[in-house]
Image 1 (tube, rainbow, N blue to C red):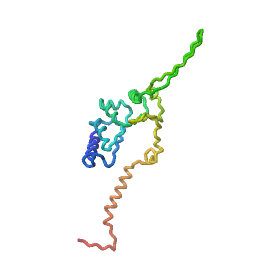
Image 2: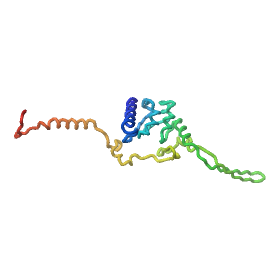
Image 3: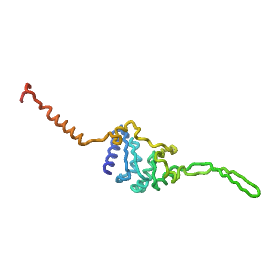
Image 4: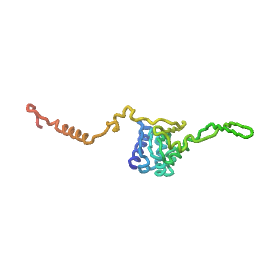
Amino acid sequence: MTILFTQIFNVLCYKADKEMGGKLDTPVQFIIDEFANIPQIPDFKILISTVRSRLISIIMMLQTQSQLKDNYKEAAETISGNCDTTIFLGGQEKTTLKDMEEALGDETIDLWTENSSYSQSESHGINFNKTGRKLKNVAELNLMDRNKCIVRITGLPPFLSDKYNTSEHPRFRYTSDAGGGTFDLGKYMSKKRRKEAEDRTSFIKMHPDDVYRIL
């Protein structure tokens, strides 16, 4: 698997640099599921920061942030830092929740305190202060609605969004989940063999009244 990805990246970068003026004619996007469970791709921290200029993009899917750190060690932070968009779908792993809490940063809130005392003379006071708190702390992230996700895009404030319902996609009917889009290898090979057999016999079909010249 490592050799495959290395070869693909090398070929695409060579094509872009040597044959297409530095950018691919057709943008290429890699969607790599279970990214942390495949062998480490050599020099990936350099690749992810350089391929974008060649119109190559990479979507990495991880179950937890700690998986990336376990696989890529000190390079994990560089890899994460080169991702312009991060989508948090929810989870309970402590390292991931803590990293997300820090990444979201703080917000300013208004704090009102009301004091009352009852002794020989009654006193009453209200204090108003501005203070800071985490935009989402670990406990809140852990209890996040599973139909929601947090999106972080470079240059924009993070925001809470609904997860996309894939069943509403116009091409969902072609997927295996909708009962379509499955590939029947046996049926395909049978059809292919019939076609090859027809092609082999089509040029030797003879009829009683045909005239042939033998050379």
